[in-house]
Structure formats: structure tokens, C-alpha cells
Image (cartoon, rainbow, N blue to C red):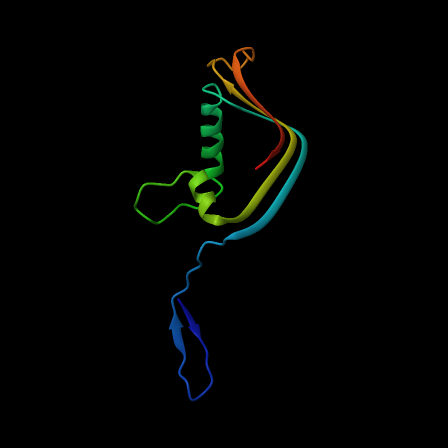
Length: 115
């Protein structure tokens, strides 16, 4: 709590301090020649571990409810638009659980991709 000092005729008053989470506003535009993305069962543990590491960057919540994953926290903090334009876009959906195997996948390709 903080005491706010005011001039007469008003009295000083006590203010309970709290800081709401900061929100970040952005407007990002990405223009790429070639964009290649991959997803598959071999990458899920890596993304999960990465999210757990990023969770350690934020302070512990005093809320007794179950913890939110990092990705859900970021969705609450970030506000804005992201537009991506790629002249060549390829999404590789990997089928193997072995990360070294890159021969079995479904590839979805597009020219002049806008997201």
C-alpha cells in the first residue's frame, strides 16, 4: 500500500498498489521470398520443452487456479496484427517420430501466399 499525499482541503489516502500485466501492441508485416514450416509428432516434445523454459521467464502467479501454459499467457499479453506474405510457402506435415527422418511427409505448397 502507498500513501498518496494531497493538499488541503483533501486528506491523504492509502492506495493499494497493484500492477496489471502489461499488454504489448504491434502491427507486424513480414514479406518473405520462401517460407518453409514443419510440424509432426517428432517436434511436439521440443515445442513443449521450449514452452516450459519460456514459462520460467514470467513470475509465479498467486492465483491458486491451474497454471496457464506460456502460449496462452502470450495470447493475453500480445495484441495486434501479423500479416505474412510469402512468394513460396511450404508446410511439411511430418509422419515419423524420428526427427532425423525427413523423407516421409506430406507437403502443402502455395505460390503468393498471404496470411
